[in-house]
Image (cartoon, rainbow, N blue to C red; front, top):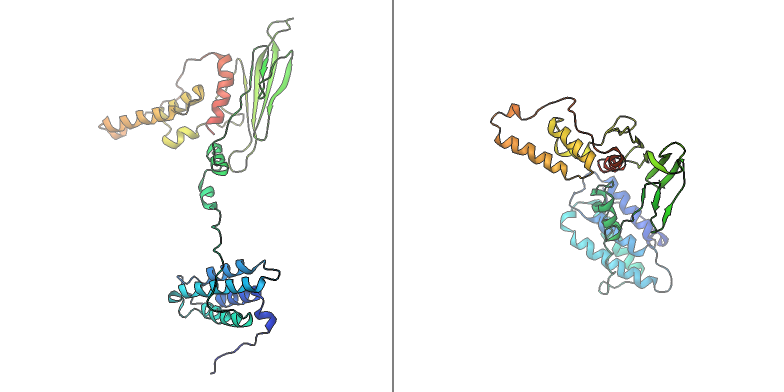
Length: 312
């Protein structure tokens, strides 16, 4: 059988996009392509260099791109032996250089700038706000502060201070992530002074980070769970997978204090027991319904809500 030939029109030869598509088609049609052959990279670099060429300097830029293309194919020649797409590219480069009157010696196209490192961002925990912000902006986030207490007295994010006469429910905070509603009740019957008696917090749905959660607390009722019964146990679960007294103590300490460092304290205590107990079967202690002293309700009302958010 003779060597197959292909008749190419001048328009096709002069079209970088057509040439790339032909090379790609041949590559996909070949069943025995070496995994080390880098011809696809050469193809993509050439297409990128010629994609938006216009104006009078187009021919010179095409020649620069073709010389770069040729150099790329020479670098990968050893690993592309027998690769149909590679040999098609080599012959195509020769044809295009003749078409555009390009010399073999001369300048080449500048290398493409490196692509953004999306892999680094994807490997981050997208639910970790501080690390994600640092990666995107090159600096840690700065935080603002607001507060509500007493009658109520309000300090805003913009450092304004107000004392409000309000009774009933009123919005304290509403943004893309969080909604907080306070309920003010009279301190005594007939009194104009009020106190925050109830707090409703809605953690809004954030894709893969959190489903919508609702937490409600009152002065005489401080549940250690959201309305759906779920609790903030993620921090403790990471280090203490067995739900024994160490785990239960960790959850209690984190929820009541808001300090995530208590997870390390519980984990350290468990590891000490693991080292010093001769009988491994006695490592875990399971105790249901352990009672704990109750702290000030007015203090825990806001503290417990913030601790639940920390543990998600």
